Length: 221
Image (tube, rainbow, N blue to C red; front, side, top):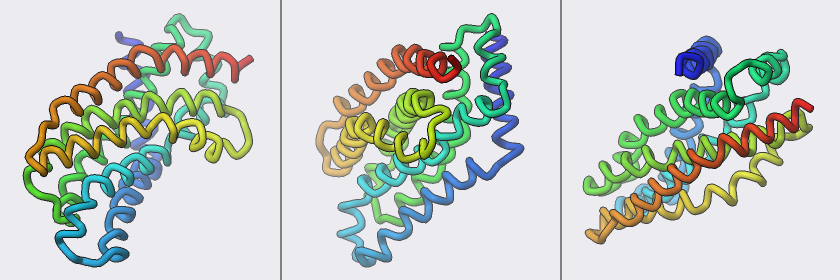
């Protein structure tokens, strides 16, 4: 656990020192959502109807922006080889880097989401469920994205390939995240959707570190 915490602190320190990746994710998230009222018009009923879908799609695309750099920097400077040779299992290393990635990207998106929900005229009943759904869904996005980032490590035009690998796996999280918020706004049952999002998170937490470690080993060979 000490080594895990050290890796998380190391990645957080590097992310805050550079700053641009995390800032770029939040700025893209805000701009993507702000563009929709300009495109579809300021009609409150129209914005309210599409608000949950717009916020979730923008959050999904924003989370993908920094995935390519998840392992790339350590791969280029040789740190990844040292981590692979250390006593710490590579699966734990993957989990530590995913944790730092979520703190620097997923958490700021969750903080910004309620403000953008107000901009999109979302009903107040959906605010809390939006935050809960993002809390359950964004870690799954980071975990699944880590597998794609490990598989494209060292390849040319990895960003395009990463999108093709990861986007189909993001669709279930998107569907149930939007459905939970819409159910809360419409007065329907939404607990099932949240439980499914929790199930995705637990399943991703159990499986993706092993898949990500296998991808890293293949890239280092």
